[in-house]
View (cartoon, rainbow, N blue to C red):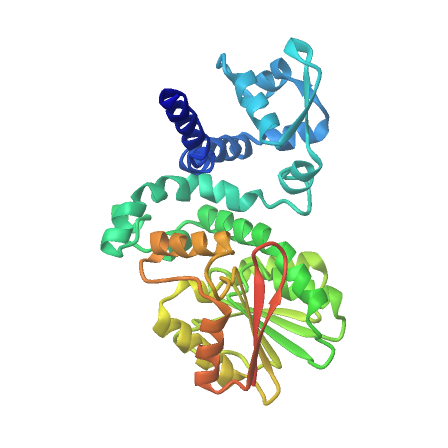
Length: 354
């Protein structure tokens, strides 16, 4: 009788053990991550943009000679990144509705640029996360060349273009959401600080015909923005200007925007940029920071928290922040009111009113 009860208690205890599945999925998460990054690198989703194909056809088009081509493709099916009709050698693979929109390079909503950069740069650098946590030092190009990420990018036009494409892809949805959600009707001018390709200025000008917009960035970036503006046919209301936002005053405007800019810097430089924006704004003007704002409890926005770790990898002392952090910094500078407006996915607009 005692043995039977003991066996029953043992079975119950085993049944109550926690499930390790989530730990394993996260711990081995680099497997599916690299499968997706390789698919983007190979332009698999772009090739499938012309229509479904068999594994043999895709192997020929992408020059894949491994016996594991089907494992690769079926793994992407299991990850819900591809669709498949049939099985075996005659099975035909196709994009899902999401990969067709976001990962085909011919799509206007292509976001694969950030994944291209992750594959080319970040995937290897994140191997140094433990060292970064121990030392506080960046783990990117500076370890090999002694030059910072931005110095490396601006020295190589091709890599600079790749970086700009990456930022444009990941920012498009956020900028489009901002153009719809924020009331720009009471403002006449916008300066986008760190404007890169001019994407936000163009989106705002297209959505709000009364606005005059300026994309402000370093001199090597200005020609990229100017080409985008001319191609969009908006040169009459959107301009590109260059300067150093740490050395020069910011251009004056009713609204100053900073898309994924503040998180690149340490606290002193964040405060410098916020103060510069305050000085450049009129009474009633607004500073809008578009970032992956971390929730105040620091429990929910996983992407924002991981992005902050990425800033450690890239810059050492840079970091992402909560809405409460931003509110404290802006109020210390003199802004009267601060609010956080959710945008697309994990991103929000942190808005400070002068």
